[in-house]
Image 1 (cartoon, rainbow, N blue to C red):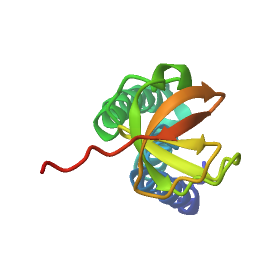
Image 2 (image 1 turned 180 degrees about the horizontal axis):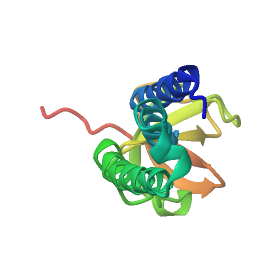
Image 3 (image 1 turned 180 degrees about the vertical axis):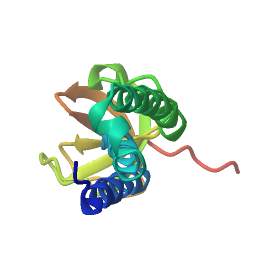
Length: 156
């Protein structure tokens, strides 16, 4: 049986590239195939008879796949911890106050308001300048209707 080292080297290089890509851009799920190709490449280069002529090679590749899957699960939990999904609706914002980030042009969706940590498209029947405190009067789809809140008078 003729073993071409170029095949083994190619498997190792592609495996390393996939692993590096996963570290640079988490979420692409490249850790598992990268690990499999890395193990297959090393087996092909250093123990070709185990990879090609015995059940040890396929078992080693399966073990690599399971280990890579377990490592990837823990890695993703570390990189992107789970959080509750965003469940705010515009109806739930009625009565809340926010601040205008982008000036509101009458009867358009050009305005933006921040309510807590969320930014919403806003509309109003009158123009409202950026930096103005507003109150949500109703929600409509993914936008809110607002009115300016009168600033309290400074103490005399």
